[in-house]
Image (cartoon, rainbow, N blue to C red; front, side, top):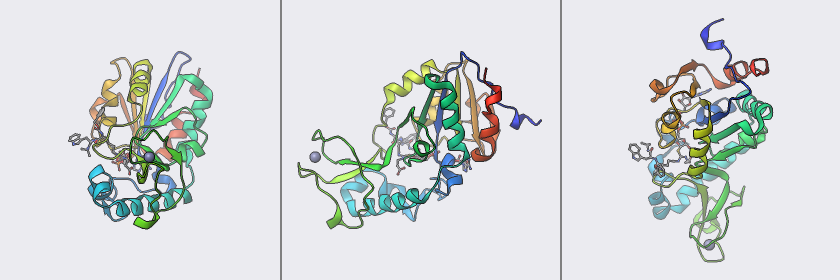
Length: 244
Ligand code: BV8
Ligand code: ZN
């Protein structure tokens, strides 16, 4: 049995913190951030995923996110999403999932104990801090005229954390990292902060595994790298038999 297939042992005292990135949705057909060389559906990141881009051209931003709503709507969860949902079933409150992804594939695979630190594709909110809560929204906005307005007059924007904005639920994330004894990081290049630092925030006794086809930029911080596609290797790594 090569080291890569050796299962990850999870004991009844273990608490598992999982961080996922775009790579966990790659086998569902959704493009990763890096595969485009920083280009997403033909857009440059700074032209569509920053507050400045929103102020400069809200229509272009909404066209970009409408395109991603369309594609994510056509995608299905893959075995990696399902393996993580099954692990949550087995561990209950000893399991916590933080995703950088804005798609809803973890939820559609059955995950419930998760947060989206970079926001959610199918949620919109008012651009003003008018007190209105973010709301579920699957609509496509393809032109300035179609951009919905809030009662306060503000434009409706994607509930997405853009570059330069503060990630969501950082206190909860810190708490869960502090309690974890095992950290699984799946399908993320380690290019984006603060997510790329989570592996360093975990204590020295925490077992830290990276799963993905290529070494991440923060590879040195991991106890073990399992090089392979998440959908192919994660089910075997987390198989039920190795949980006490
Ligand atoms: C913040 C929503 C302050 C948008 C996203 C200079 C140096 C260091 C940092 C900075 C800097 N200048 C600015 C910063 C901060 C900046 C940052 O990190 N910039 C980087 C680019 C240098 N960060 C921010 O602005 C963040 N905010 O810092 O606020 C703060 C900090 C701490 C506490 C409080 C306040 C906000 C960042 C959020 C940006 N929004 N998403 C949208 O999605 O439209 S990030 C976006 O890109 C994704 O959400 C994702 O997180 C990221 C892409 O990363 P990955 O998920 O890793 O994807 P990537 O393509 O890079 O890698 C894919 C991986 O999958 C690869 O490793 C590949 O091998 C692997 N893979 C491929 N196939 C598979 C696979 N793995 C498994 N199976 C497969 N089949
Ligand atoms: Zn408003």
